[in-house]
Length: 108
Image (cartoon, rainbow, N blue to C red; front, side, top):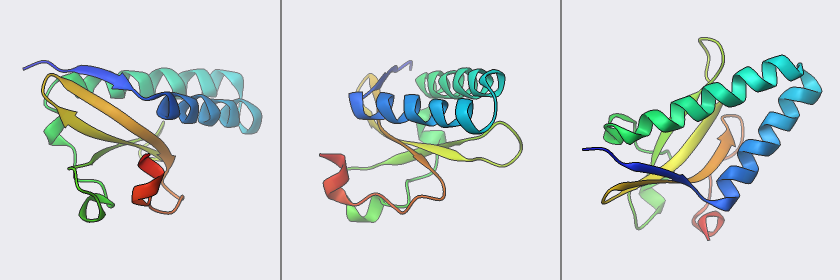
């Protein structure tokens, strides 16, 4: 089964902000590579999104949340928190792995 992968406005903004950070603190080339790689990783959720682990916040939520970890090298730096709906994967948030867990109110 193939799913449509959609980002919330908030997730898209967080992805854009993270890319801007990469441009400022690393290089525009590395930022572009990071961004495109993350987009490709998100697109891969269209097939078998259940392969990803439950998000660390899952036990606090009334819905099942999963996460996809991503980074340029062998060590992931960011994660996409998402839900699987019929025919859709909805990416709710993009977070750096060093950030604290998301509280339920952060999903509103």
